[in-house]
Length: 479
Image (cartoon, rainbow, N blue to C red; front, side):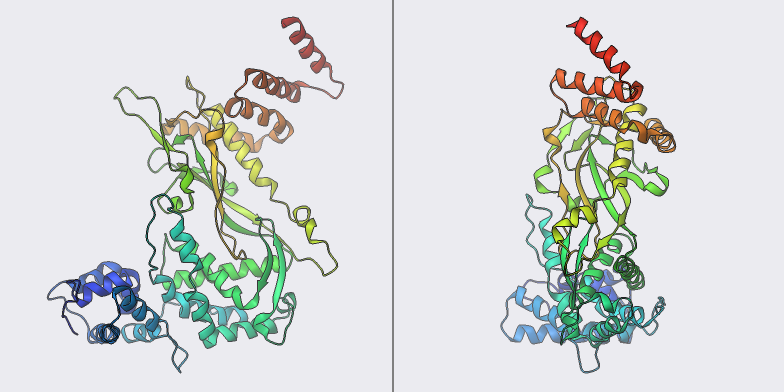
């Protein structure tokens, strides 16, 4: 292998790590990222197969340099070469991987031809997800990198070049249930289904673009947890199962994240809500969904040691929710403007968030009322052609107070949530809503009073309206 340093002073192995990234280089050499980093160490012993891979990469880099390309051009040329598909139906990346990896971690072969071809396609596309994208970071727009990465055309281009891509399309068209959903055209890949989802997205989904959508959804699930090839293929199969379910008119579950600002949780604290999900501290991975407009921080009151908690308006707490995912596939005679009525957002979302906010108010007893305000949400929708977070600006509500909960308060929050969940709290949702508005949203004391009276009526009122009469009579005397 040519160890000659490039114009930037880096050795060839160091350049490979910089240009390809440790995940992709580790995949090609069949080793984890730490071991891939070690290829730059003098005296590092590589296997004969790993040396051959490094030599192939070095030769491709040398060929790109001979074309008088700049550094960005050389990187692009080497990356493009890795994803080129040969006559054997494999990309150069998969072919190099085969030199160093003789065994493949087993994944379900699939229950039918659709699943079997999709698993094979997922494995073939996997190295493209490991390939870094060159995005100039803009501090004021941290979410730009995610949008650019998802819009990159390397995934659909690779799928279209792979024989397994066409095999998957043919399998879908031949499938009795799935195939009839896509409107046929002379070219099967151009078939599409008009679909409207309760996630807020609607429009045509083309069969040729379906694998890309599913793989992007799978990658969002595994990239920050276990981005191995086997885990990616298994998750891709799970996303396919979700889509097959909703295409048949059933409800599936996808992961949704709702971020809240107003408080900090102790390190490692989690609230298990059972089938309703989990409340946990925000992670760096979550913050990629946070809009740049909400990056400001807010400080709270200092404790006895002089330490002040700082929250961000972008959110410091995330609620992971299993979103009930439904679709409506209209007939040609249907009015598509009826979409919101056909598949409205699941009521469980607002209800669970309402209980979360109310249980917090009941659990934490401090001088300043503790509450949370929603900032952004992200739904991992496997059929949406564009994924971006929606957000609310918590700065427009009543002033927030930055607090850091103790573990005792977290435990109390969890206890109150489960008490509300198991009770008949649905009967007094109006009262709960009005109480929370009075606490967290209203600025005018008159509005706070009105909310309080409405809450009182909902809790103690009757259909005859006697408590309403008594409350209003007392208010009349007071004024």
